[in-house]
Length: 301
Image (cartoon, rainbow, N blue to C red; front, side):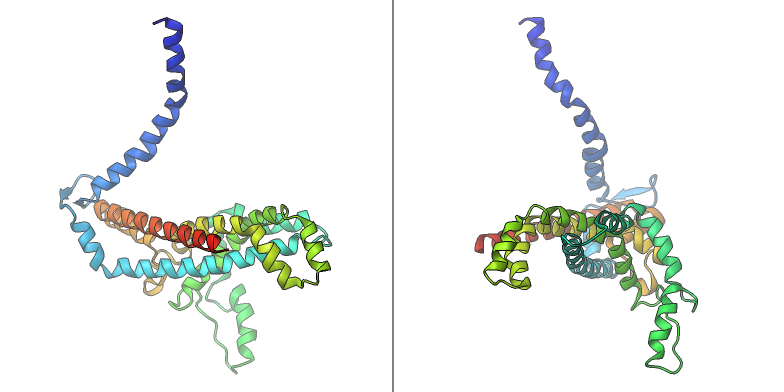
């Protein structure tokens, strides 16, 4: 075999070698290591004992884990259920041909996504304070005064019935503009002549929205549904910054927050890895279910 042909055979391997090395070191090895650690009970990196599947058995009967699952599922349903309609409404409004200053408005709605969850959490922690002078209570007290002679300020982040709702509102403020940009791009690919033809045929705004706008942005909506659901199930930063982790009566304890507690505060890395793998399986199951349901909907239409 000639030296030139041998070197040419090595070139493809050299081209993919950086990816293989990075994937192995930063993705494959951590995944396998975490799977192995989930079979151990640990009290810190230097003190661990092999226990097999006991971590997963305990997981099924751990009330805090199921509380975290319920909080995470509630957050995901509220977040996705409110974010996508809000983003679509903004995209439709900003796509109106008679709207002025479109670029400024688009930038204004998208900019919150650039500040990051931690910065936003600090800002909302200030805005949603329990003192009467906070912005949230400054808006709430006059409204409550219409129904009560002595309205009281609310402890937005200290009330178990309100804390998770504040987290959802903060997450919406952070992310609606992100989804809006995708939907705005999808709207601009819809043929304008379809709207003109529908208007000539007597179709009203709702009919045009249902039969032209929704089918035109459906692939983007399905993509955002999947991506936002996965992101919502992994929420951690906002609850941690706003309420210090579990929040009042564990009302903002999420699965990733519970993983953080077990792994980095308690030191039980094995149980934390088991929580992580349970979350991974849950996300995969939800994603597959969403893909199958949306595929059935498309096949039926």
